[in-house]
Every structure is written in C-alpha cells, then in structure tokens.
Image (cartoon, rainbow, N blue to C red; front, top):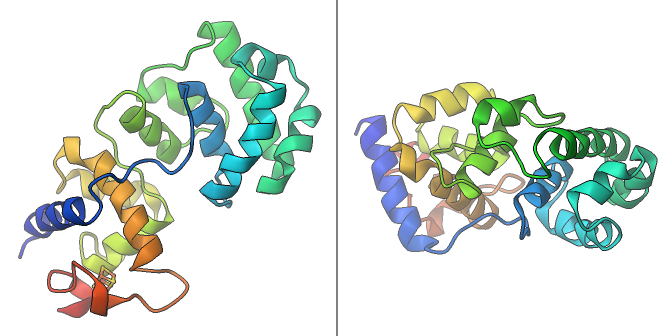
Length: 210
Ligand code: SF4
C-alpha cells in the first residue's frame, strides 16, 4: 500500500467514524478564531472556550480589544498559560486588524502568517475553517497519528509533516482530515496511554500494526 492509498483509506474511514468533526474552538466571527487559536497554544480547547467568554464580555469587538492594554488582556487570559506573551500577541494582532484590515482578518495565507503570534498551524486553520480553502493543520495529534499510521516516516517537525502530507492528501480533504485526527487522537490513538488499537477503525491499515 502506498502512502497515498493509505491516506485515502484513512480519510474514508475517519469520515465514517466522525462525520461531523469540526474545529473544537468555539467562535462566531473570524477574528475570534484568531484569538482562540493563539490562546490554545499549550492549553486545551475546552479551557480556551471558557476563558474567551470573559474576554468577549469585556471586549466584544476588534476595536475594543485593540484599544485594551496588553496587561488588561493578560489578566483575563492568564488561565490559558503563557499569559504575557499571548496577551501581547493578541493586542498587537487586533491593532493590526483594526488599523489595516478594517476590523476584518486578512484572506491570504501569507498575510495571516505576518500577524503577531500566527504560525503555519494557525494560518492553515483559518484558511480551512474560515475561508474553506485547502489547509493542513499539523498540531500534536496530527503529527503523532500520521507517524503511527505511516502517512509520514518519523517526521516530527510541523512544517515538514505539513509538506509531506500535501503530497499525498487531496487538498480539499486536508482541513476535515486534520479535525478528524484530533478526535481520533483524543478518543482512540491517545498520547498519554498506549493507543487503543483493539478498537481502532484504522487497525488493519495502520503501519503500527502491520
Ligand atoms: S491502529 Fe493503533 S496506532 Fe494505529 S491509528 Fe489506530 S490506535 Fe493509533
């Protein structure tokens, strides 16, 4: 089985297993996803979803958040960890959106990458979820599962995993596949315990078991 064939089979099976898998960060406007994805670094999405409720109660739009001092933002986002740097990035990012993008978010991958605190993972998430464009989000679940399954061979660096996946995954499938890998990584192919291969829908195509 080639990597491409394996990838297509994994996509097909995970679609059946998690038909409705989507982003686990709550947001109703694009700029809020930008904030949440910065807060999600080294923090759970569940905690981020709680913390942003307080943040948006006080700062309901880009303008008000852009006008807030980083220290005021930090006081609220502290429970997500790395409060100082996250608040600094969110503040700088919202100021750019307010001053240069009329309170909207930029629509190209390159422009998104230039925003403070936005790396390839975040920019891909926005491209896929907000704009419905091809995207591959190489978070910790994606990297662990792709290595175990055999879609990549012992590659841990996020950008290298992303580049390897672009070669074997139909572009339009990337975003949804990555969401489904998160679900599968949390429920079955877990990080902190041995993976539950006995109840995994991929067990007969997974390299770990072949
Ligand atoms: S078979 Fe095991 S290692 Fe492979 S994806 Fe499933 S749980 Fe993970």
